[in-house]
Length: 180
Image (cartoon, rainbow, N blue to C red; front, top):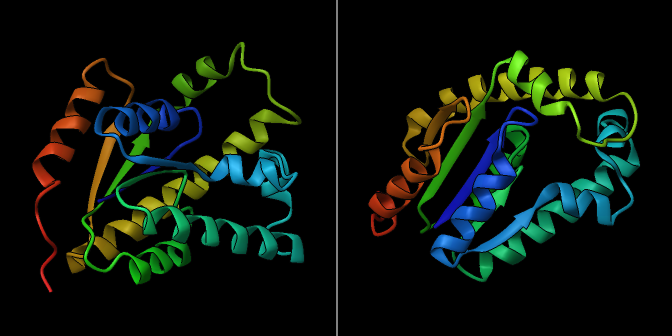
């Protein structure tokens, strides 16, 4: 099973991704961590989108995604971030159940969660840019999900029972097999 945790910045993706990976003994990959290992911060990721450096990072992320998927059940934190990345994932996921959780929080909650977090650069601009991009991705993936190759679930706000709901969905779908 492949579980993707995507969505707005500061929405709890990593918290829930780590919890689900731990609960189900799944592998875990943070694409943000892959970027940082390549010397690229969140702010840099926004500014290098159309450069050789961005292509190198994309290749590194795809290689790492393919590696962890080949090892078995996995939670991908922050992947896919684009339709192209989703198409790539669909190309390597044959025979896997694919769940995509999209986390949404409203801007007021995002701002309150930003307080006290130490981030580099112009945080507000990065958060605004990534929020707009994630909303576009939600719309695109919503259309793609009609093909039945993956399950897309929108998680609204950060609620105490969200982890329970995620775990129940994972339990319910773990033994389903995709229709060929």
